[in-house]
Structure formats: structure tokens, C-alpha cells
Length: 60
Length: 142
Image 1 (tube, rainbow over the protein chains, first blue to last red):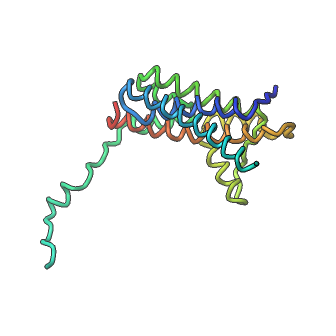
Image 2: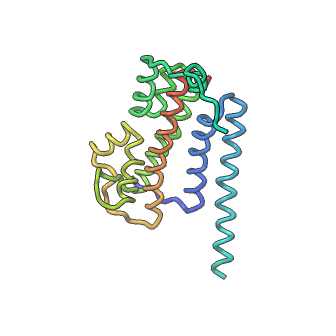
Image 3: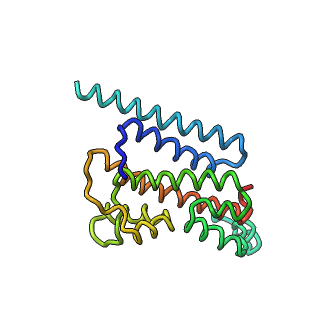
């Protein structure tokens, strides 16, 4: 069985799993874990979008 | 002017206290490495353990399904060595993939390299999870 993801969906899935682990392991209370996980996810996805636009500008 | 000499008691007070070696402080990281998330589960951190297990196992499985490359133990290129170090962090999943000869097929599409990265990062995330299980075991984290 094989799977072919697009670049964006692969980055999105990566962000979800990494954010869950970062949130749980890097903070102590449940509330802080959820907040930090969401923060990491936003940073991952935001970074992907910013990097995409930077590459688009470089290509022009 | 020279610094005043410190007494033996002052030096001892500034040092961090040694962590006691308990059965759980050894068992939790070992089990957590072998089965991702299990280090938390044996300490009754059910939700955290299941979330960690789900994230790491799904990420590793996706890496295999995406036709990622599983690195073998090697002494060659530095990137290959680091790839192996990352992969081996997944513990039992890495051992299983080696036993089943997964991750050695021919790559048939351009995004398969994501699979390789998924496999490495799943292992690295498990290292973080193992460290967290240890911190819980020694009482450094609730």
C-alpha cells in the first residue's frame, strides 16, 4: 500500500503530530499543553505559508 | 582582590541534588522507547500516553506508506548516520520495520522523501517522549 500526499497536506499532517508531542512534553498543565500545542501548530503552518510565498517571490 | 574561599558546605548547597534511581525511572524510559507512549501509560498518564502513542505510531506508519527509506546501521555518510539515529528513536517500530524488511522498496514518486523525513522525525519525537516519561518518573514533572 502506498500513499502520495501533496506537499501541503504532508506538511499539515507533520504539523499536527509534531505539535501534539511538543505540547504534551514541553508544558506541565493541561491548559498550557493545549495552548502550546496550538501555538506550535500555528507556527508550523504559518512557516509553511510564509516559506511558500518567499519561494514564489524568489522564482519571479 | 581574591575571591573568598568557599567552604565544602557552600559548594554542596549550590550543586543540584542527585536524582534517586528508582525502578520507574529506569523502566519508564526503556518501555517508552520500545513502545512509544508506553512510558506514560505505565505511570497512569493515560491521555498523554495515548496521544503520544497515536502521534508517533501514525507518523511512523505514514512514513512507511509514503515509501520512506528506513536507514540501516552504517558508518558512512554523516547524513546516513544521523538518519539511522533518528530512525532508531522509534524503538520497537524500527525493530519491526527491520524484521519485516519495510522501507527498502524502490521509490516511485517525488514526495516519497517526505516519508523518509516522517520516519526520522517520528523517532526524534519518541526521544522527546522518552525524556518526558523520565521526568515524570523522577517527579520533576506532574
